[in-house]
Length: 215
Image 1 (cartoon, rainbow, N blue to C red):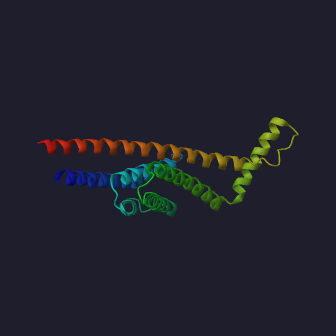
Image 2: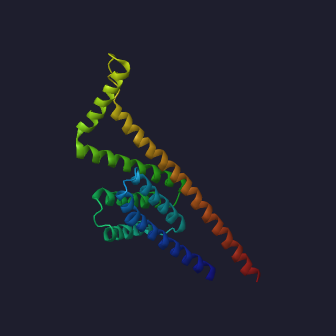
Image 3: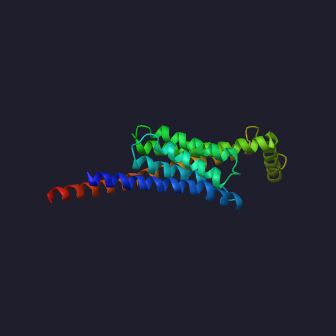
């Protein structure tokens, strides 16, 4: 009984620490990355969140644990970084909801982690594309295509750009693909690492229980 209570206490402590780390990454790290204009900061922050969610899901079977951690993170983010944009809050909200849904039954943990990583990363990339379009309009992408046509003509003379070639579409596709691949890798690695830690802890617990019985 004592061993079980000790294990539960350790898990609760670990979850609190992970929640604090999540809040720190969103409140402090997010502000720092935004200030220094680090590229792909949404991808980095999003996958930190994915990793934390996966670890929480492996530490407890309690429903609502991820939702609780995400809510606390959002509140802390609002207090520490009140000038964060609405898309930043929306990103945390979606990560929390998706994490709670994917790990609702705690089955197929690796697949759930990969899906969370990929979808979270792709949503981050699409959100950025939508924001650029809203800020600059379709003229932004048309300018990119026009510049590509100019470069093409500089290299190939009078030859016209193939009608089906749109540099903006290629850039969007590559951008989304990079996010999806990173999300896949993070979801897979974090799931395997969390499962390994859980397995090691379970093995140690079983050994301690057998040791107590022999005594």
